[in-house]
Image (cartoon, rainbow, N blue to C red):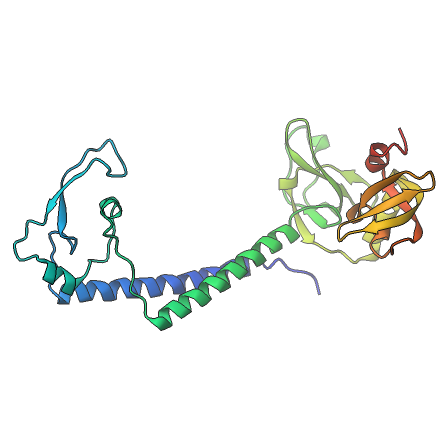
Length: 277
């Protein structure tokens, strides 16, 4: 079965959970608003006990505002205790420490916490799915947009191939090197392609990748001296040691420590470590 991008489905699930959180918050606000009105809360000060008598438009934080006691004679400490605060907040509430906070029940608090945890988990899954379907080395891509520049140099829309590498050109454009089934290399911008299979198993592509690595790489014999989850420390027959990313030499993924094996190094890695000029 062909792999499918689950990003949009995950986003819809996240959106549904966020709507549930918003519904709970709206219900709590409506409940507190009803309680305030039924208790005869003061509409002049909104249950705060003070009003703004002057402010300047020069400050967005309201730090220059001047205040006075509520002008409503029927508004007392007792009535404010009974009604609580009107469920709304302003920059002045922040300055006066009279911010309204939702009064959640125990069940509502538990539900919100569970929803928050689920949303966080979905956000991680969305991030991983985005990474999985972003054009990088080893993924099968398709050109979906025609590039600019000379027509004879544009990569035709519809071309499919395996990504050999990614790079940024002198103008700062992110590009990929795509190898098609005919062995031809294309250089479209990353934004002009989309991944159609993040982990292609088709024998055609694995053979093309292997052939390209052998044609453009440097074969060496080395012993695995150490290994991490992402790289291996290789010692060559001339005692030179250096770390090789597993992504750059797939044959190292299953190699064990102290094992001697044949490795095909990418040309750039061979040059970096002085193996070739």
